[in-house]
Length: 465
Image (tube, rainbow, N blue to C red):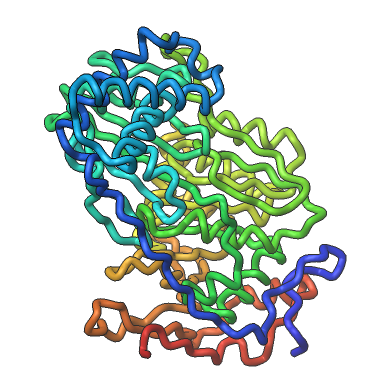
């Protein structure tokens, strides 16, 4: 066998270089977010007083149209005058912090602004006004960020949802929204939330993680990546399965890079997260219903629309319902090489969930037929997981082998074998080949793609140093 060429020469897409040495990736130190004033009740009182003073100085309804520098100057005057009146001793640094916090209240999301400026934070979890957690590098940490009270937190939630034409109240206590940077927001308020309003913000980094970075972080090995690149180039349908926060979208982005440049791709998502690098990409996003419960567009409607737009491939950010059936039928009728993700802990669970979703389409199709179509349409399953130490791994790459006893059967080609934990809590293990030569090799040969002769011999140890 010759040198691996996962994408035909005409596409211009190159495989990951075989000689690149993996570099260590250091995590940047997390800055402190527990300022001396941020959590004190006296600070909240001062900010409230400053806010009230500002109303008499500025027209807050028009403040967003004013330059930030001008507003900052006015806030500085109010702060200085108020501190003199109240005879509150305060250093210049503390005074500047008060000004910045009031600016955050006027222009942004109040106490959350420092967190939203941190690129290393992937999730912000607010459990009531006094408990704000963040996730960095797979680990949750309690911050010193606080809201004044439930009303303050509710005000911030209302500010977020109003910008996307939604509302949150006792009649609509659960709401989904999106920030300007694309971050996904989910909020729930009393009476459903017993301890006060709660909110989660799922952030999406602007940096597009490269294949080399996945190898450096030991999320995947070079052999596994080359194998999957070949499968994608040969138009094999790929299902990415994993739990919440396991890295499904990152994996899907990585796999999508091996789609040839001359193919037309249509993406369908609830919230735009995918970062495809090809030129010919058409992006669709669902739309929730308005305040009158009208005008909503779901994924199933968008899949049907996509099929009328001559796609070479359809990529669904996440399969959640009846659109799974339309997607499956599309895969079996010419739109090969499509991809999607699903919440599941194992490949077997993934197919069970897909079967349940297809039944949600309310079409009287026998379960036996659906299972047969699943096995025919989907060729490969990438199972991703977030391990105990916060690291994310592709724990298995499995091939669909057929149907047996009414179940879709899979066979691991590569897998991550855990061997223990280090003293500092890091997961030990190795990536290995299962010893089974995949049936898909015939498909790759017919597509003119050759793999390295030693691609199945690589064993990569993880965290043994």
